[in-house]
Length: 380
Image (cartoon, rainbow, N blue to C red; front, side, top):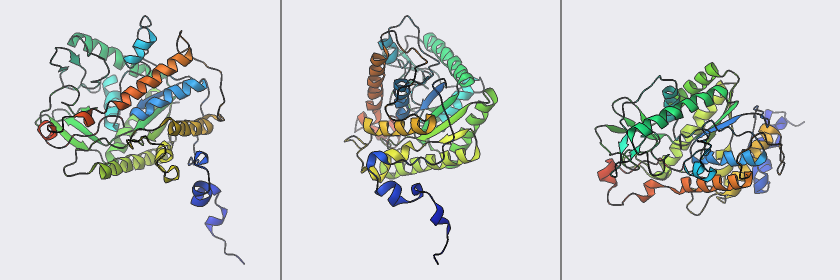
């Protein structure tokens, strides 16, 4: 008589050989329980690291309602709006790499937090928003213009959270730079892309699991208060750090720490909130089953084949959409035609992800600028 034990009744997906090693690469599906369901009418908003930028074009290509709460002035040509970051995410916040950034964005949008950081002035007299330093090509022409754009932006963010159906957020980093005055977190170390680094004003911090969970739980709780039916999808960016600011740290081990923290935090949040769902894009891209073939030669940027694998499974499990299926589109993206819009967005995504400013920093100046080696705050 054969012994009966729990493993005898488990499905194939519970076993490595059956669900990973024995399958063709394109057929590996690591999605476990995923209760979220979306329809072509679901208003899906995105934010996070640059990996999240791919979701817009895939949802639009399949005919889903990708929510753009800050589309830019209609008088502007579509190509110009795309170049200025309109439509790259659901609002013009640029890349949001950390949980603390997202939490503070929500607090700023509801006037619960007003950072003391002054606008950053470039040598040519133009102005940057410290919390969106790359969002305006050529920068703003004045502080007044920057502040007006910021007010409009925060209003759009508030409206987005109040009306979205699904919020997809990609966790990218744990390393961040914080104002020692009020704890404000920046998307990139001051001095790298605007601003001037001052070790007395800016401090390095590496978020822990507990901090990431607390930040994201605050966002989830606020979203539930202003939009009770909203659902949240969390993913973890598979893009490694470009650099680490940890003293004596190695970028490889720092990447492992960062992604491990984010993955554990995402699991804890999904386990403890019925409206939060984890989707394993990280595992699909980094899994050994694909033998690194989803990465470009730099071993950081994700190839379109990998993104397609992720989105194919997302649409299958979230919407029941089989590969190659086109659903009726709810949203007119551009008077110039959807395909042209998608091409422009794809080009902008590529530009954003290739702007690895930390890789371009003068090799002789990091210690003078940062006090340590620079932190990865780009393209994660």
